[in-house]
Image (tube, rainbow, N blue to C red; front, side, top):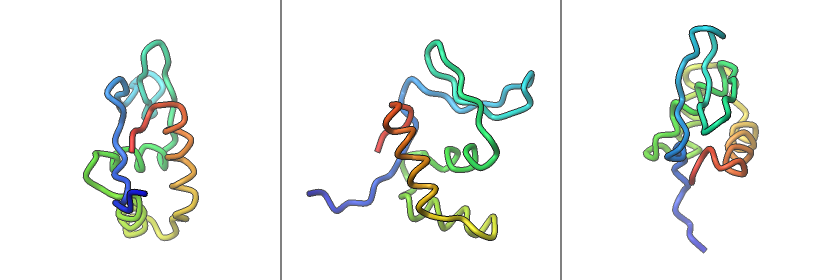
Length: 87
């Protein structure tokens, strides 16, 4: 079993961008767009392959007062299952 902390990053076919029409951050995938809320975008901005999940939680915790680590992990797990995020 690998004990190296996961360093999530966006999959190659996924792009995080801002939609001017919707005025919201979005994930662009082939033939699909996922509209994000501010929290989801903040998490994904840190998914660059350099930050571990605990580092992402700590960074967001410094930015916002209360960031539940289990919710960040659940969000990333869901996007990993959809092949939007790679660990």
